[in-house]
Image 1 (cartoon, helix red, strand yellow):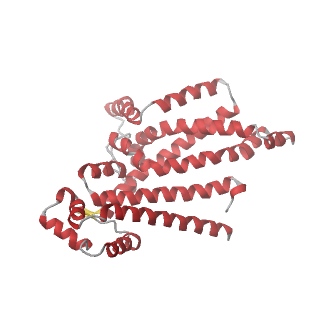
Image 2 (cartoon, helix red, strand yellow):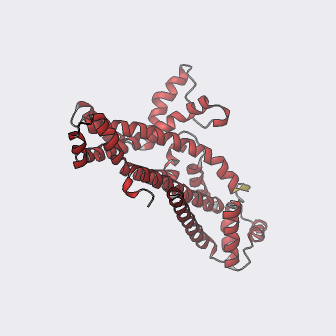
Image 3 (cartoon, one colour):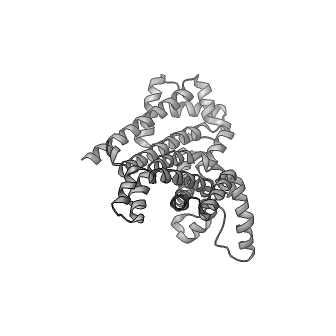
Length: 322
């Protein structure tokens, strides 16, 4: 019951956040003269006929609060993000086409940087000032210093091009749908994953190392050692669990912000996902797509933070289900 109440509270809070974002977005773009709004929604497809069609389709000649009610109804009850007159298709269709690409990059990148970052950070914390710790410190500085697009281009030049020249065609650029095969999908995603994970793994290595070193200096850790517990149990059962709480908090922030952050990776590897298409929508003044992507980005942040809250509650008994 406590878990159910905790989850319900977090979901209701998330819905409130989405409503506030949707409300702010609506009044930002729609609380203007009718022709200005219609011309903005039509974008580069604007013509007298298209402008009149926009006014009819969205009821822009009705009172603002009536438009607001219709906007919320379409958004929350029908998941209708509008229609792109520039692309000639619904925004929902565009988002549905983009989400698998961006999700493939984000999920794989997150898993990779967590595995590498946490593993290196934990080993470095348990062996401070060792050769491994010093080498990992240099690696962290190199990872933090390298721009994402530079890493991506280097991977293409150093790995993709030579392998394909020698007939090894598994590693490719572009996107291959997961539904058509896991192995080819991984071959298209491996370089974007490594590119995205390189910088983030460095961040999580430094964060997990510092957090675990601080945790291993706590009184309860010394007490656990005094009781005769094995060092492995002290580190992983008591130390790592407590040290992961700031890592989990940072993960929620990073995942929420990845929608815009993957645009560089998508551009380098020819992936037409949410990040790249959102930039193109801004460049072309494709207002319906911009509005849809704002709502989707807010949903990314909300979902990420709900998951983080659940993980935080499981890791730290002091905040569990409160």
